Image 1 (tube, rainbow, N blue to C red):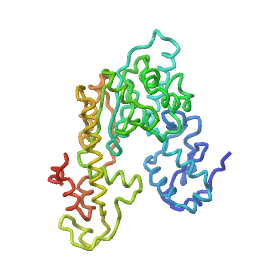
Image 2: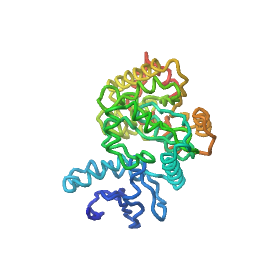
Image 3: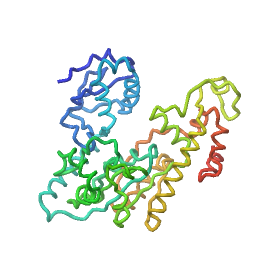
Length: 378
């Protein structure tokens, strides 16, 4: 059994939490164990609180993971820590009691419907298509609290080691489901994900990025989505691509964006920027490639489903008009309207623009693309 770590080994006071391989949650300040291994089987290993609730925001996990995983001295001494961090990245943390209860009720529905065929009814299948940093997780966690909606994560992500979180009779078959997906994506979708269920479950879907399942040997869902005209398609977009680019590169820790002290005067910047503060310097060539790839992905998707009704949503609208967006999604899925909450933690676009030292070059990169008018609103 893995030992409970000495928290003094963690090199930063910001790391309030981390998880051992046995899924115990360690609180640096309260020494409180809030989760256990029994709660890690839901939806990709999503955690469910046992006993008392944690009153510290779960967003503390992300900076802790980033700092620990880049500390080579620590991780070289504790290889199990890197394994733990890898698992943590794949977990979908249950953020509220409401979400936990919703999942448990849906689990009961699937268990009964898998046993009693006569209780099953047709569901409304859907898929949420987009790319990183377009609000797919924000939308997913909101929909999962709806009593009639089931939404899985990135089922066709080639990096998955297992498919956990399937309801009902498939709950304890994460590895065999992965092999099933690779061998026959069609029956995997039709017989597992989009199978009939007992009410109140009425709409079932999953996340799919533009390039998932396209010739990577991990199962191809696209022919099924094109053939099944009952599948409802939600397309997530980012109106301001530079914000998405910066968010993606920070997440990946790739050197397409660097921090350096800006020495030249920047007329668009104010405050600390004029005093030579650190600002983002964007690799414009990489950003142009990002725009070209993003445009190609959107064009291919539009052509593939040109004869279908597609609900297009933008991250910016979800952040500013959450209630209207949620109502439009629920209407599109054919389920009852419900007071769902989008957990938005969004930095204003104005703040993002002020951080860019070579903003004029970034603005010029938009010319000739579908986003060429975006800089007019900065």
